[in-house]
Image (cartoon, rainbow, N blue to C red; front, side, top):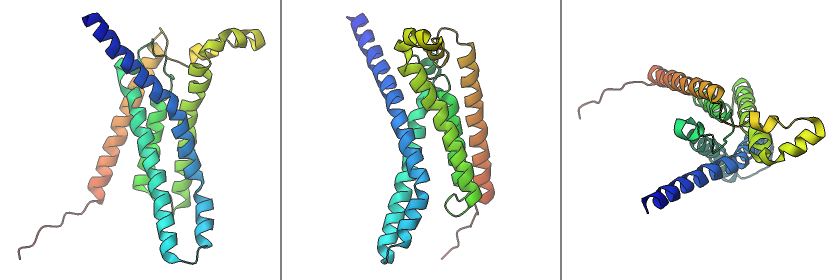
Length: 209
């Protein structure tokens, strides 16, 4: 009975992690679509004659765009847990932690800058989002999802080794290095963000009535 309970808990954990890994490409696609939809939204706002309607439309767009980025980062955080990412039975995308780190850099650029009013910040965020999405979607599709197509890839062009190279396998030397690099990057970026907030914050002492 205890063995059955442990197997049930482990199976549920695996199912949850693999479900998140499978749905993340959809979230990445929506994140990119909403980010690059900004020129269309701006053109549409310029055609509105009611100021209140334009404000509601713009605030709704910004809320959905930024909330989707935060949700994608929160779900991507599972790849920073060594017991999950380094589990060869799950076969997760090998560059998933790096994708999370680059997405964190994009959010850091949005927090410290204004990607809606500053063209340079918008370009930086755009490049980081494209890199982050590629780091996750490519190994997810050509590694995880193509894992059962090794024979077909070998018969076509001898590319059967690609799926195994894009997922976490038995050899954990490279995944371990990627995970440690990502964790160090998160720590450094978080520290830089904290220092930026300390520098920008203003202390105002309370005044007695």
